[in-house]
Length: 123
Image (tube, rainbow, N blue to C red; front, top):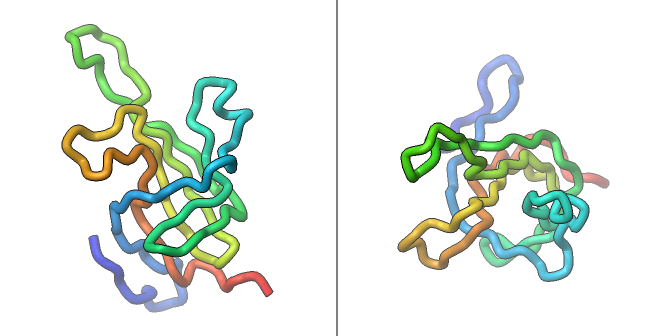
């Protein structure tokens, strides 16, 4: 998927697919989530050389997959968060429960999509 101009009629802009790792800022993880066994969404992270601050979590989802050893169970593989940054970007970021083999770097946190004009930056 690539970035598209805003649809006619003033609808919501489409997301640009990026699929790039992000680097959480140390000490900014949501510890309450971590205490319950989920990854703690970092309050701040670096992406493309710029530090971003999470202003709001708009939606959370879990991606599941089947047992990899032949059992009938399903396991959570990914935690997804649709967020708005303090700078006005709307992003879909996610955490892989098991980092991808062969991925360089072996990142757990990724930016999946970005909507640059989703909302005007705060004044």
